[in-house]
Image 1 (cartoon, helix red, strand yellow):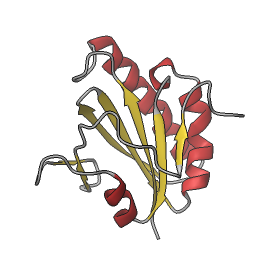
Image 2 (cartoon, rainbow, N blue to C red):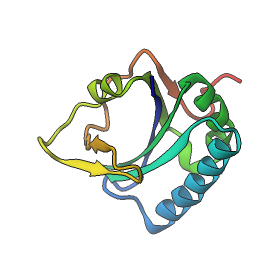
Image 3 (cartoon, helix red, strand yellow):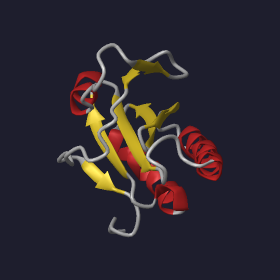
Image 4 (cartoon, rainbow, N blue to C red):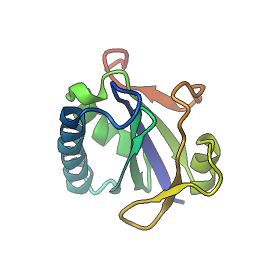
Length: 138
Protein backbone atom coordinates (compact mmCIF):
# COMPACT_ATOMS: atom_id res chain seq x y z
CA UNK A 1 0.00 0.00 0.00
CA UNK A 2 1.34 3.42 -0.92
CA UNK A 3 1.93 5.81 1.96
CA UNK A 4 2.34 9.57 1.97
CA UNK A 5 3.96 12.46 3.77
CA UNK A 6 2.29 15.77 3.02
CA UNK A 7 4.13 18.87 4.25
CA UNK A 8 2.39 22.20 4.84
CA UNK A 9 4.59 25.31 4.80
CA UNK A 10 3.08 28.60 5.92
CA UNK A 11 3.58 31.65 3.69
CA UNK A 12 3.80 35.24 4.88
CA UNK A 13 1.21 36.95 2.69
CA UNK A 14 -1.87 34.75 2.93
CA UNK A 15 -1.73 34.01 -0.80
CA UNK A 16 1.21 32.61 -2.82
CA UNK A 17 4.12 33.89 -0.72
CA UNK A 18 6.75 36.42 -1.68
CA UNK A 19 9.10 35.77 -4.62
CA UNK A 20 11.89 35.15 -2.11
CA UNK A 21 9.76 32.60 -0.19
CA UNK A 22 8.88 30.76 -3.39
CA UNK A 23 12.54 30.70 -4.42
CA UNK A 24 13.56 29.33 -1.00
CA UNK A 25 10.85 26.66 -1.16
CA UNK A 26 11.88 25.59 -4.66
CA UNK A 27 15.45 25.13 -3.37
CA UNK A 28 14.05 23.12 -0.44
CA UNK A 29 12.05 20.96 -2.86
CA UNK A 30 15.22 20.14 -4.78
CA UNK A 31 16.95 19.08 -1.56
CA UNK A 32 13.94 16.97 -0.52
CA UNK A 33 13.75 15.29 -3.93
CA UNK A 34 17.46 14.48 -3.79
CA UNK A 35 17.27 13.13 -0.20
CA UNK A 36 14.24 10.94 -0.96
CA UNK A 37 15.81 9.64 -4.17
CA UNK A 38 19.22 8.96 -2.61
CA UNK A 39 17.58 7.00 0.21
CA UNK A 40 15.28 5.12 -2.20
CA UNK A 41 12.48 6.05 0.20
CA UNK A 42 9.90 7.02 -2.41
CA UNK A 43 9.30 10.05 -4.59
CA UNK A 44 8.80 13.79 -4.29
CA UNK A 45 5.64 14.41 -6.30
CA UNK A 46 5.31 18.20 -6.42
CA UNK A 47 3.87 21.25 -4.73
CA UNK A 48 0.80 23.42 -4.51
CA UNK A 49 0.98 27.14 -3.64
CA UNK A 50 -2.05 29.15 -2.53
CA UNK A 51 -4.19 30.21 0.38
CA UNK A 52 -1.19 31.30 2.44
CA UNK A 53 0.61 27.97 2.31
CA UNK A 54 2.66 25.67 0.14
CA UNK A 55 1.87 21.96 0.24
CA UNK A 56 4.57 19.42 -0.68
CA UNK A 57 3.60 15.87 -1.65
CA UNK A 58 5.82 12.82 -1.14
CA UNK A 59 4.94 9.14 -1.51
CA UNK A 60 6.63 5.85 -0.76
CA UNK A 61 6.15 2.38 0.71
CA UNK A 62 6.78 3.54 4.32
CA UNK A 63 5.67 6.99 5.57
CA UNK A 64 7.73 6.66 8.77
CA UNK A 65 10.91 6.03 6.78
CA UNK A 66 10.06 8.76 4.30
CA UNK A 67 9.57 11.27 7.13
CA UNK A 68 12.82 10.14 8.80
CA UNK A 69 14.64 10.94 5.54
CA UNK A 70 13.07 14.37 5.02
CA UNK A 71 12.89 15.58 8.63
CA UNK A 72 16.54 16.76 8.85
CA UNK A 73 16.18 18.57 5.51
CA UNK A 74 13.00 20.30 6.72
CA UNK A 75 14.54 21.24 10.07
CA UNK A 76 17.50 22.83 8.30
CA UNK A 77 15.31 25.12 6.20
CA UNK A 78 13.92 28.44 7.46
CA UNK A 79 11.05 27.97 4.96
CA UNK A 80 9.76 25.06 7.07
CA UNK A 81 9.59 26.97 10.36
CA UNK A 82 6.03 26.79 11.68
CA UNK A 83 5.04 24.18 9.11
CA UNK A 84 3.78 20.68 9.71
CA UNK A 85 3.61 17.29 8.04
CA UNK A 86 0.87 14.69 7.88
CA UNK A 87 1.91 11.06 7.54
CA UNK A 88 -0.59 8.53 6.33
CA UNK A 89 -1.07 5.20 4.68
CA UNK A 90 -3.17 4.85 1.60
CA UNK A 91 -4.51 7.49 -0.79
CA UNK A 92 -8.03 7.43 0.69
CA UNK A 93 -6.87 8.26 4.21
CA UNK A 94 -4.82 11.24 3.01
CA UNK A 95 -7.66 12.58 0.86
CA UNK A 96 -10.06 12.28 3.79
CA UNK A 97 -7.74 14.30 6.02
CA UNK A 98 -7.52 17.07 3.43
CA UNK A 99 -10.99 18.56 3.27
CA UNK A 100 -11.74 19.87 -0.23
CA UNK A 101 -13.03 23.44 -0.07
CA UNK A 102 -14.12 23.96 -3.67
CA UNK A 103 -15.78 21.00 -5.38
CA UNK A 104 -13.84 19.77 -8.36
CA UNK A 105 -10.85 22.07 -7.77
CA UNK A 106 -7.82 19.83 -7.96
CA UNK A 107 -4.16 20.19 -8.82
CA UNK A 108 -2.24 17.56 -10.79
CA UNK A 109 1.36 16.98 -9.83
CA UNK A 110 4.24 15.37 -11.72
CA UNK A 111 2.88 11.83 -11.53
CA UNK A 112 -0.64 12.90 -12.55
CA UNK A 113 -2.13 12.38 -9.09
CA UNK A 114 -4.92 14.78 -8.12
CA UNK A 115 -4.65 16.75 -4.88
CA UNK A 116 -7.59 18.79 -3.65
CA UNK A 117 -6.91 22.38 -2.70
CA UNK A 118 -7.53 23.19 0.95
CA UNK A 119 -7.58 26.88 1.80
CA UNK A 120 -8.23 26.33 5.50
CA UNK A 121 -5.00 27.49 7.17
CA UNK A 122 -6.24 26.53 10.63
CA UNK A 123 -7.35 22.98 9.96
CA UNK A 124 -7.33 20.80 13.09
CA UNK A 125 -4.16 18.85 13.73
CA UNK A 126 -4.43 15.14 12.97
CA UNK A 127 -3.16 12.43 15.30
CA UNK A 128 -0.36 11.53 12.89
CA UNK A 129 0.74 15.12 12.27
CA UNK A 130 4.34 16.13 12.94
CA UNK A 131 5.28 19.74 13.68
CA UNK A 132 8.32 20.98 11.77
CA UNK A 133 10.79 23.28 13.48
CA UNK A 134 12.06 23.73 17.00
CA UNK A 135 9.10 21.89 18.49
CA UNK A 136 10.12 18.52 16.98
CA UNK A 137 12.09 16.58 19.50
CA UNK A 138 15.22 15.02 18.06
